[in-house]
Image (spheres, rainbow, N blue to C red):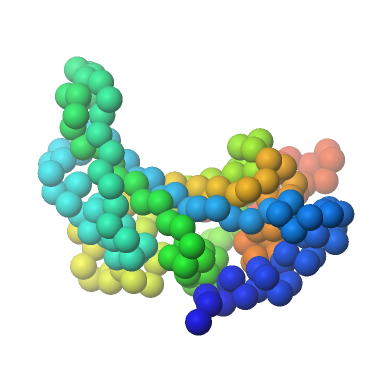
Length: 194
C-alpha cells in the first residue's frame, strides 16, 4: 500500500502543478527526489557518547541508520583532529522519504511551541528547501523520559525543479505550513517561527 502522501501527490498535487505552470510533459512536473537530515554536535565534551546518542535518536526518527560525518581537517582551537566524528547524516528516498515527510508535516511541526509557520524564504535558488529543527523531541517516536541530549538538525528537501516558485507551490500543496509572505513595506520577519 502506498504512503498517503504519495497518493495525495499523484491525485491532487501533480495535476495542480501541471495546470498552474503549463507543463506539457509529465516529467517536467516537480517532484521530491530525496530528504537529507544532517546533525552536527561539533565540540562536545564527550564526543563518543554524543555520537552514540545522535546516531540512535536519528535512527529512531527516520527508521534508517545514519552515516557518521567526520572532520576533514584538524582545527586546534576547537580541539578537533582530522577524522574525528562531528555529526551524522541520513538520506531518505522513496517510501521512507514520503513516510518521514508525512510525519514531519502533519505530526511533528504542529507540536512546535509558539509555531507560526515555516520560513517561505529558505530555498537555495535551485528549488531545494532547508529547515532547521532545534529540538528533536517534537517527533512522536522520541520518548521524552529517555532523552539524554537535545539534538538539532537540518532537514533538506531536494526537488527535481530548479525553480523556487514551483518547489514552494509543490510543498504548499503537500501541506507545508509556510508563513505568509509580507506585503511590500512590511517587515519580513514579523511573526517568525520559534
